[in-house]
Length: 364
Image (cartoon, rainbow, N blue to C red; front, side, top):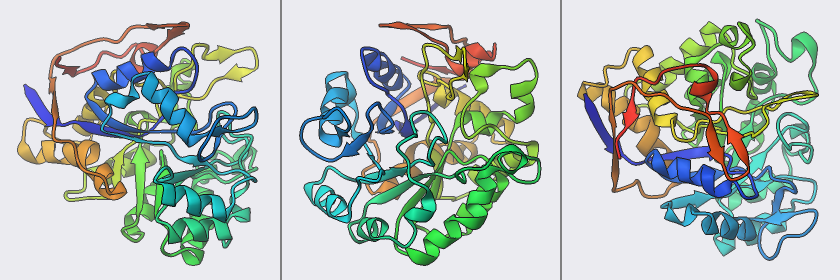
């Protein structure tokens, strides 16, 4: 069986920095990806709009040039959000939007994930002029939706997690204070987040990764499969079921692909484990497997339409750019991923780290 879909958009990914960037972009292009939203948590962060980089801040303009030089100019769309820091001002937002360079801003909870030490607690943004400027200028807020500063059972427990707390306590306040602000709830992992997004106004959407549609925390801890370790961490079966129900709802327009693909040449370190799953080269196959496990018949028009909405149409429609007019094809035949040599080191794709055979193969 072969399915052909419009080329898809990865609206949350990490291309990082340095000499391996071209390898990561190459993997995205090879899997039929027409565009990407490249996250700004480089070192230093992408926290300025235009001009040259400095020792403390990269600019969207300069990072875009670097990514395009590495091959990203082959994408139809490349969005680079501004990393929200204490140096972000309403004037910066307005000027960036008017220049055409600024389409989105990324909120990181301080120390909540890789290179997020420049983040500012959400309570300091709510009701403020930066969010008001974003709403007034049509700039999307991309949120890493976990509550800042929690630990122990408040951070991760069967009844409550940092994510469920955020969607209970913080996001309702954001919508109350900033009702016109377009929001993408990034890489949602919980039933609470899925429920919130589904019931929110139309200008609130969400990305979901392949790993959060395929795995639970049980898969992670049984054998300590650290290649599955990412932030937010995979959750419980009820959360997996809720995410699958969200993407399987006929006609849904709020949920779309964002892999959070995060390459690490060293995954296990002396002080712990680097957070992030690398799904470059294999994300559409993983998503197809997740949809099938959720009950979609991809040999049927209705099943293909569900996957197409999630991969190819909901994202561009939400962000307001054209859908791709090109297509890519996948064949239902087994394939395996291997450790991927890159310019400097190696990267292990998630399926290889999980010793998982893919059910689908992307056709050249």
